[in-house]
Image (cartoon, rainbow, N blue to C red; front, side):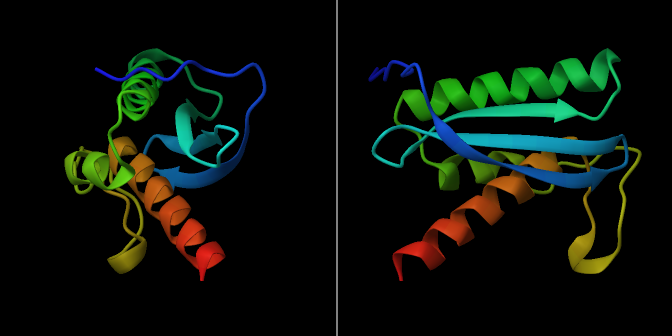
Length: 117
């Protein structure tokens, strides 16, 4: 397994998205080459089970990225996961916190695609 070490300084973006559990903040940091290397997930001001699960999701995504996985691979496993408190309608519907994380990853991929055009 390839494992990239975390540099001391990283740059990235944080996106806020509304979920049924509250505001979700997803930070995606890049290494010096502009490749995503870590993801942090924070659920508003709340603690508890949902917040701990999101921390775990962020840690697992970071580990997968450092091991060579792509966002596209990770999205296949996160998009569309649903829970008992979805929010929004139609294309803005967020079916769970995990789905919210996936939407943030999708936004990141789209923004990177626009930059390279």
